[in-house]
Amino acid sequence: MSDSPHLEIIYKDLQNEHHRVMKLVDRLRALDTSSDLISLLDQLRTLLIVHFAREQLPDGFYEALGERADDRRDEIQTLVEDHGAILSSINTLIEDAKASDAGSEGDMLARVSRLVEQLHDHELREHHFADDVMGRGAASGG
Image (cartoon, one colour):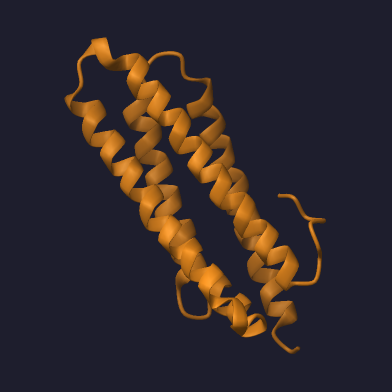
């Protein structure tokens, strides 16, 4: 199909963004106090807003995938819904971190851990789906 090179280019660009997101996630995972929590969550939110938009915009990654897998648009819709849920979780965490007292630090770090797992699960499903649609099987893993 003629969109294959276009899809590959988009995928590689998004992989580069994904690596930047994962570096920030690694910093969040390493937190043992909530001192840098708000700053890191705010940075993550900004990166994800851009990353998710590039996936969802017309002529973006999801549209290119949908053109090759029209019968699987429900899976793409689930990934789009994940974006909203992840950003909502980040927004709630930032609001709560700003309002919380030091006594709830353990709870906040546990919630960050759940957010990281939510994001990891989404990215894993997204990459498996993309690799499948692009005929790669599970070879990419990035």
